[in-house]
Image 1 (cartoon, each protein chain N blue to C red):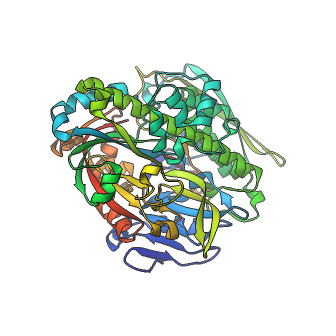
Image 2 (cartoon, chains in turn red, green; image 1 turned 90 degrees about the horizontal axis):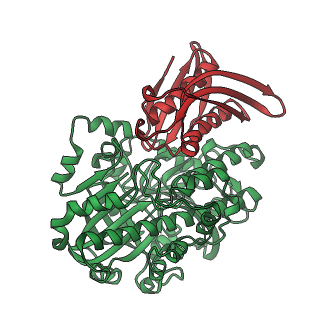
Image 3 (tube, each protein chain N blue to C red; image 1 turned 90 degrees about the vertical axis):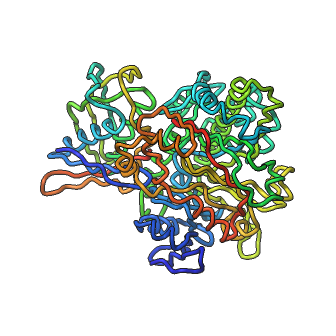
Length: 142
Length: 476
């Protein structure tokens, strides 16, 4: 499974496909990093655990992608791969996921940043089940 | 369906939950190019928000954004209305400043390459660009409180610069404590940087004077060298918008009405959440003004050193600085009464008429300079605010050309072409730090600036004063 870029005048939209929900979330992270940089140049030298909450699946989807973007913008961490995602659902607190990721700290001498992504927006955010598995859409502001 | 009102205005009639109609300022030609009806839907979506006054507006440079359209203007009642981070945009107080000089184009023509190279070296630009100074959090909070005045106190420019900056370069009501640690951290190293994407610093020449009286009041003359800077609040502003959107999305169930799009997440102006956002947004706006003030200071220094002339000979004066992504508490006439409103301008420029109390003394008789940057290579316009904008559009006009091509379309259209060479053929020396920036920003990716400005002029929202031609440009 993978993703394709949607045309959007001011921004970039991405439609992501996954066999399972975990696959969908992993693919989305990779799509976001692909927009930022050449993922082939990244190593998985550093481990990172991302814990994120959301009121529903769409909220969780965007919060998760916002966090991955922040890891780069705020901590210079470029995610290379997502190894595993663990889920929790709780009626009181909503949904929660823990993503076990690897990546490395941005090094301007080795990594090229293709596009400055200002944010992952909530606009047209979507996560749904399809006959083939799962599909999600997100739009980034560039 | 759009209903034509006159040659400049189309109405989005009230349907469903819309509280007011929408009005799009445009022309037949621009409408054809709009293609997607998505912008129209976004104008209608904004009209659903509580406390919206008169209409949901779109300027002729409107294009498909997210939540509020880019080029959107909406005013909200202070008691019943809302404030929305998505109605301001991620780049809080993204804006323009225009500086005039005492130089004629002939005096710098031979040094263009040198000048552009020196500007490119002295002004940090590009993705996530970092400045020379790393602020302590304590000092950064002073920037957030004091705005451009902070920069002037540090020696970046003179007090006279503040007089011709919108709001004196400092927005009231800023509270740095409402800005998150994440935003503060991102802001520490980015003060005094241009950024990337559509941000730029451009050397331009006054190509045409369209209103001699206003041009004289603004200090503009034919063949004069001027400099336009387009930048904003960098990562700090993006993070503030992101933080507050998430917070408002989380609590959107408490608003008591359904949101047509989560990106329209908002809070009532009277509520704590709305007030906190306003205080953080104002702090970000101040950061952006300090940022543009510093960029201008280094531009002055670079001109002096490269051209080996004194500050007096260069005479670089700030004509004006306007923000075009902001929400402000301002007073406008509604049904014959003066009413205080929260005016959101997302990709729209304030345009105040002659005699307005917020104008600097030098422009009181003539009206506010309205700065409209074009895209790379086409130059810019200077307009002047009118009474019509004051009564009809909450003192607002357009902010630029507005995109018509997505970035991917632009990349495709420019494949195999040397945009660098094409720009040089147009007489523009360009330097960019990003590999894809020039391709994404090709002139064809934007609406025709002349047409956008013609609509604003015809509709009477602002009057054309001068057209500026680009000769040198640095981009991130």
